[in-house]
Amino acid sequence: MALNISKELAALERMALADLRAKYAEVFGEGTSSRHRQFLIRRIAWRLQANEEGDLSERARQRAKELAAHADVRLTAPQEKALGSGTEAEARVATIELSPDDRLPMPGAIITRRYKGRLLEVRVLPHGFEYEGEIYRTLSAVAGKVTGTHWNGYHFFRLLKKGPVHGSRKDD
Image (tube, rainbow, N blue to C red; front, side, top):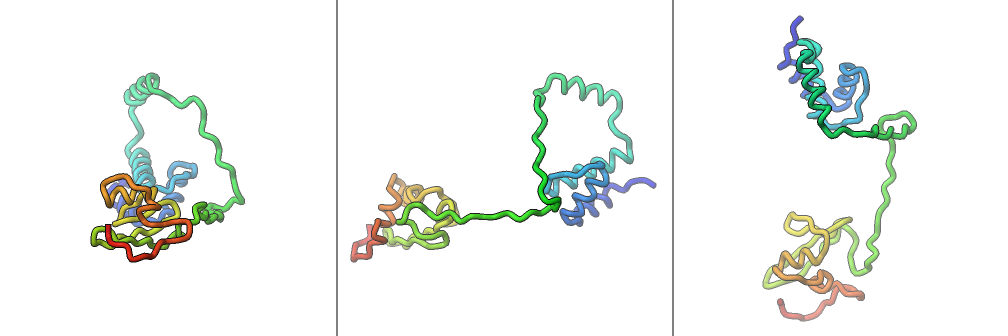
């Protein structure tokens, strides 16, 4: 029975990741650590086609050996992953990192500042700041983006040791 690669590809595209991994193990005779859907689909399709139509010709194998002889090759094998309890999905423990700087609010908070008639809103993230859909590593980077010049982010957003200053200060 001839392989219909179009039907096989369509069937692979509809498979869940776990099914693709099982199909990979079936076709290659060994498991995979990959969770990349497109990679698995392409590799499985290649193997199915190679099984059906035959592998590389002897001439192609010889040429591949010649090319490999001149390529940089890894000299040490990759280290084995430590085996856990035997289950594929193991529980992971996440820790919450609190900012060492007490001037900065908790992640999720929004820092606001009125600047040249505009209300600026910056969301505090666990590792950075979001302003107008872009992520910045520091408040100084956000202040630089807004003003076009270098600013200390804590000063620009008026985040002082005692908390934000609330005064009747005019817009800058």
